[in-house]
Amino acid sequence: MEGCPTTGKGGIPVKAILEAKDIQRMLLMRYPILYVDRILEIVEGRRVVGVKNFTVNEPFFVGHFPGHPIVPGTVLIEAMAQVGGIFVSRTEPEEGGKLMFLLGLDRVRFRRPVLPGDQVVFELDLIKRRRNIWKVKGVASVEGSRVMDAVLIATVQSMGVEAAP
Image 1 (tube, rainbow, N blue to C red):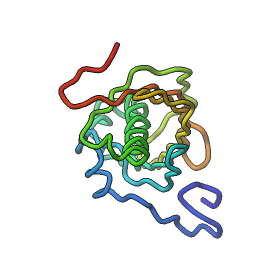
Image 2 (spheres, rainbow, N blue to C red):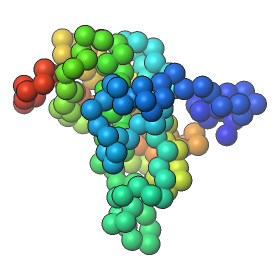
Image 3 (spheres, helix red, strand yellow):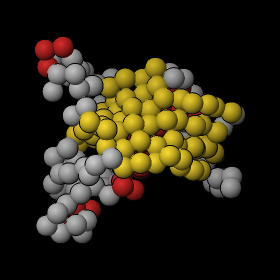
Image 4 (cartoon, one colour):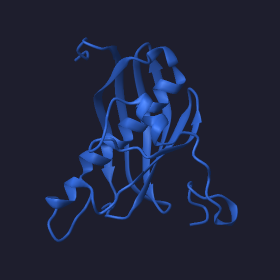
């Protein structure tokens, strides 16, 4: 997989900068809805790259679809949003202890199905930030081939406070 973001020159694996235990300290989600395995790169205030390995044991494969399992689009969006949550948490450490709410999605496109055994790489770049509103452009790929792209808009709120409409 040379050229893939998870491998460097000569196919040597790139070391993750955040592993599962670090991610669990940053996100409130847990199995079965934690969809980030590793963070490979963070440029605070600019970009983040995260990875999710979808195994045949994912609970949603039982019903989506029997005999022809694919990762639901909503799961891909949630995974991308979780990578974005880690980006915000690392860029603005004072946001720790707060919740991130997805406000909107723009230009979502699913390019091809994600299957059991696929490793999805999520690359998010900051488009704009205004106070507690974040807008990022995300691309999801498998083995260098784009499977989804989207623009995510989210807000960070104190726990117990509902997201703005």
